[in-house]
Amino acid sequence: MGLLELLEQDNLESLQDFLSKRFVQNMEFFSQTSPKLFETLKKQPQDYNLICNQKGINIVNIHNSSLIYPEIESKYTMFEVHQEIATTPLNNPRWNLKSNEIQLTPIDENKLPITGIGINKMIENLQHLGGKPYYHLGANFLPSTAVYGLFGGLFLELLREKGCFFHSLFIFEENIDLFRISCYFVHYAALFDQVSPKAFYLFVREIIDPKIIRHYFAARKISSNFMLLELQMYKSQKLDAARELLNQEFLSNKRGWGSFEDEMIGIANSLKNSNYNVLSYPMRVNAPVCVVGNGPSLDSLLPFIKKMQDRMIIFSCGTALKVLKNYGVQPDFQIEIERIDYLRDVLCDAPLGDTPLLCGNMVNPSALTLSKEGYIFLRGGSSSSYMFESSVIEYAAPFVGNAGAALAMQMGSEVILCGIDCGYIEGMSKHAKGSYYGNENIDLPPNVYPVKPNSDRTVYADSIFILSRQNLEMAIKLFKPKMVLNLGWGAFIEGTRSISVDDFELAKIDKDKCLNEMKSYMKPVSIKKMNLIHIRGYLNNIKMLLQKDIKDKKELFMLIDEVSILMVDMSVKNPHIGILLEGSIAHLLQNLLLSILHIPHNQISVLYKQNVEIIMWIFDKMCFSYGVLLAFQEH
Image (cartoon, rainbow, N blue to C red):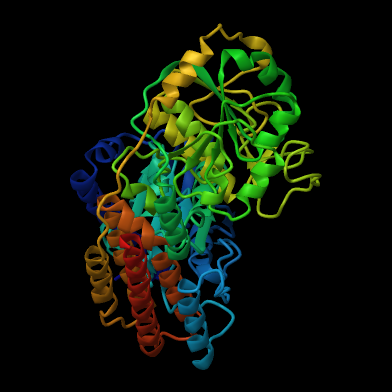
């Protein structure tokens, strides 16, 4: 007999016996899986305790004897409340179904002539098979689900007894007593079995490391990208912070996927740029490096930069160049990472003049031809960077400011951030005045939310700014510069010191010596042997996984997670191949999943097989395209 049936029968003795046995069962489970939690659960309650009597079940506050759930007509209402919460979560106002606004929409095949064709054919197949404009997950299957606070957790057991299966499940309960009470209800060992493998994240009291939240989505980058089901049982600062952290990672997950076509452009450009000297295994010079981005706070920092330009090395990032030159500041290096065709026009508009150009290896070669003194660096996260026999600069994306900061952290004794705002500052435009973007309005775009500011301003961020800030924070941890000062008015960046220009002074430096030392790290490098055989082997492994017999949508989610793990492994073992293919494979698999979710039933085999054939055909086109590039290189 299950807990639901016992609660409906109103048999007090049987219910008390059941709850006692369930608690012992959970204690045995946690003694094996989490000894530290087990020892904590053994302690006496300090804040809350469970009540089970003729009135039903409830939670009492030990300090003031107040009840969590009200009593109506001599009956506690906890069971009824949790029953309501456990009813159709996807269509229940108590739950929040959050979307990353990922839609099944046709792709411009002129921009993505390989990936786009595959996605568009999947959409055509769906239309022929009667797809609907809404998602259908199937009975008792829930997407990525986050629960902030359990308040007893009875609803979880009611969902479990109904046979609900969670694609992934995140639970955070800040109060040990409230979690202990959930151990009287929830069969945790069984609940783990009703979540995808390694997809149950349970935190009690604290979230020890925020990187675990990042892993929560990264491990299921594709299948957890478009839908997040949330429930917050009560309000508290800790729960709100956990929810904000999870939502930031959910939003940033959709950024930075890239595509095979873009990576191929990067490879072609890198081959053409390979005659330039490459930044190789740089050392730190005894000078601070000022990284200048084109955020709106740059306007207020221009006097400081001009005054101190002889006491620091200045890295101008992207469109900050025009603003600096108009103010009479001569940057020591202009940093660029864009593949875009019109980068040359942007540099002409500034103009670049005598400023040395330090570009990511994948930039359009026409931009480098403008420079009187040009160098390249290998930007991490780009397939083409791992073709060279040299060091790669990691965390140099998504913005050029990230690249400038990552370079500065490896090349200077201290780093000063100016105009690296990582957000929208309320009442200000997105960029500094007088830049390439001209006059901009100050309206906030949609889908932004407040983030911790670096000053007294109000700052908002969207998914790409969140990703930029995260990469800056990761770069600081990886490169460990002596100090990073953030002079901007934008988002707070962990690992930096927020400071005013009036609060410090820079010492004199031998700037020419430092610049010559930096330029000595630019050297000729060779390109590794590129091989089509390894790409074919990797894609054949994915083809074999996709040829599995998939019966329903739950199995499809789990299969896509299996392919995701294979993709992550390849990107670690062989970044050139992994990054080259991962963006387009991810987009194809996401659209495979989305198209099948638009089928209003669980009979998915026909559409699944059709779409897998398309994906295999696209894989062959990728191999052919890469083979043509290799043939061109050899000749």
